Image (cartoon, rainbow, N blue to C red; front, top):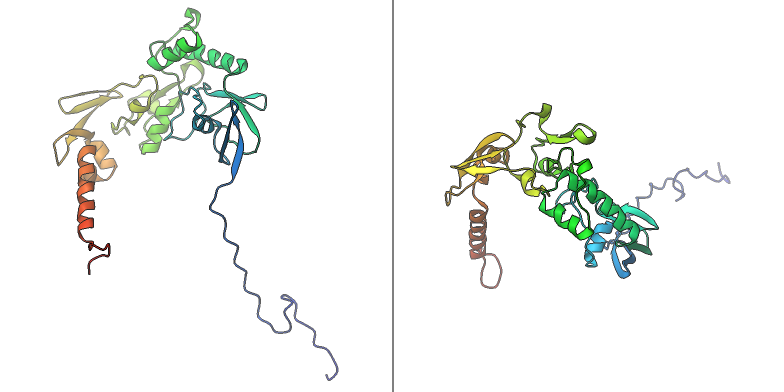
Amino acid sequence: MPGQLETPRPGNGRGPGAPPASPQPEPPRSATPLLVEGTVNGIRISVPKGTTLLRAARLCGVEIPTLCHHEGLPPEGSCRLCVAEIRGQLAVSCMFPLRDDGFKALTDTPAVMDARRYVLSLLINRAPKAPRIRKLADEYGVAPDPRFMKDPDGCVRCGRCVRACRANGPEAIALAGRGFGRSVTGPFRKPPEACIGCLACALCCPTGKITFAEKDGARRIWDREFSLAPCPECGARVFTAEQIAFYGGSASAACPSCRKKLMASELKKAAAYEAPDGLPLP
């Protein structure tokens, strides 16, 4: 009716009949990671938020001993050898993320050294012949205790081999059992049927417990024997037939040396298709 005001439609506040407002684009996020600043043994350092204490210490040139840690594998924190002191408490440095400014980490306090000696006193009774553990035991003044050397089988149950096998795909081995009887084994404590003989477990074992042998074109590991397939380029026998099949057939059969040569050859071919001025040829 004349003289009456039209009631605005609810919802957008832009007047009667106005179309809904389009969502505003979010401002671009900065690609620069957030940094936290602190000290490791008095050495000032800035690292991306979430960096582990172990990584920060190594960036400072401070060495922290480790056994279960491997740069190419997810951290586990099982050996407890990499302890450091932060906020007045001991922390497993390979698992401890630095999230706040002003952190002060110490890696050589009496509490840290005592904790490492205690861990080493247990580890050396498990693997008294392992070169890495013997070296650390000598550095920290730790000797084997005959009272605790019940079964020195050379394995410290760090799980590094299990994580390497999982990362490579087969997941053929696992830690089984509890307490002193805990061990690395295949299903039902039998030779692992899923093993492809890739040697990932043996090559990353910190004590040398996992061994293998190669002879006459065959490789033996985990009480199983694997045939080594010849490289199609040079004939060198590096990979098992099971390994080649697992990772994609004959395309993976070339040995690492020949694979580099083939890759370099392909790069040269690609470069040959470019004009002198850097523009691709028609």
